[in-house]
Image (tube, rainbow, N blue to C red; front, side):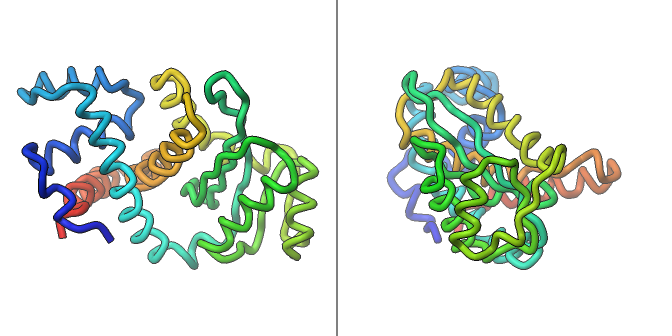
Length: 235
């Protein structure tokens, strides 16, 4: 768990740092866009300062969110997983981002690999199961490496494949793709892994599935999520 001392040697208030980090990670904005938005609010900071804040505090905020959500949703998220991978260009070279979401679109894990094969699928699934246990159903596409990896893990009977069955995870890639375009791609595999992990946690925190709830319920849950964000690393 992070401590209040994380902000100890910073002249800027924690509230401003949390706001800047939230704007950059949650919305498809560049560092300079966030700088301009803060300027409109009377806050003068450089985009390089915002970059430093995001690199320093983004993983801390994400870790605290993840710790709380894993404890709350561990049993609930084990009903059905949707697993998929997408290619991402890193410094002009193709890499693969493996992602798993539960039946409600909660992002469970995101792992970046250089290759798309059985070893990469096995690495991803082992990390996923170590943190969340094993689901009752695992929905994948017909990529052979999933079948081989699941067979090695002894859970092949839980695999489901079929047309349109994996639309849940296919749609969940869209917020990350919007952020990828705003950031003008990635230059290092390490920075891609870092951002994917932080972005998934922040997305989980603020995602309210507004199309499935009434307006009054949505406003209450949105306000609760924002209030909880403002308390991160405060004690």
